[in-house]
Length: 119
Image 1 (cartoon, rainbow, N blue to C red):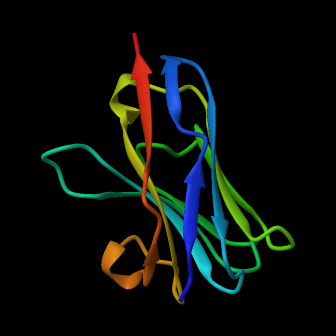
Image 2 (image 1 turned 120 degrees about the vertical axis):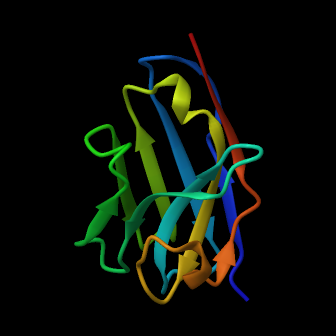
């Protein structure tokens, strides 16, 4: 069983930055971040393969968010810059054996961390 724990969420003004971190109990999986707003479906944000040399981003965050990992520390982080009001959501870390934009392909999920962007 893989355990994922997110941290780093909080309240930030529009245009500001936050860094989310996902700590895994094992470090052999591909990683991803998703987000969800109440009443809406979970949305893909970014994914990174195990070696860290391949990344993929949702169009809505491309150029503003960066996903990276540290396999020695078994973490997958999401650096979020130029935050917008519409980035407000609960952000979830996910791990699996493939890197896709579909949440159903990921086997393990964290508990989520709230990110709130204010005007």
